[in-house]
Length: 263
Image 1 (cartoon, one colour):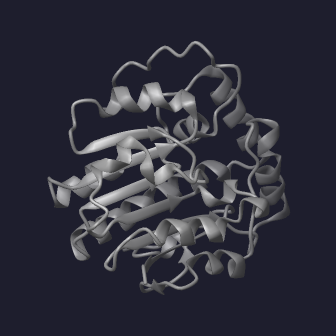
Image 2 (cartoon, rainbow, N blue to C red):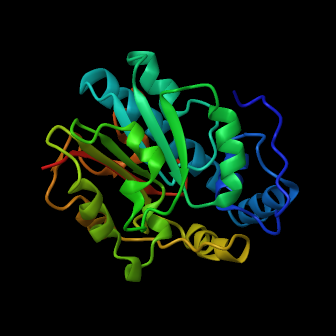
């Protein structure tokens, strides 16, 4: 899937966080401006690439656990970025061939790539929309999901792009309020706990290379995003420790992640 040619996009005027992330993951669906931005960010701290890869591995373990062990066959991946290796639908459909997945991203430049890469699969869809949009759940592509049945809401490395004014906890509460019992919400988020000053500066300086700033939060603030829901073991932990069979090498970009059953 990732070997298809990159679609032509006429309005590439700056780096895209989604395409920068694709480059950090070793993908090919990015442009020179994205690669230059990523290299500048990594020049400030090379562990940024490790953090991206650990986050992607966390996403894969979450989807595998929910599909295989919790019986979830519907996934809403918000702030999904570009499809790359080990996509949500690929992991989920490995355990249930009929699993349905809707990807959502507000980066319009992602649309052409995502729709080309996902074409031909009736069980997947992509919506160009914003997680903060009150009309998000009425988006036509989201009707692929049956909201009368459990859905896993994936907010992986997206809420740290929301400012306090965006009220990320309220966004999570609003999304989960539309799901039925048996649903889950998964979150990963960069944290300031244990981060070196150089890493924190690299994260905060990201908006000089891409148009979207990153808001680093304390563990308590990240835990509050799950308010009202029942965390699955092992709770909110470093993303490299969540259902990992072996410890990952140490890295300097700390991020916390967890999954909770919606109540």
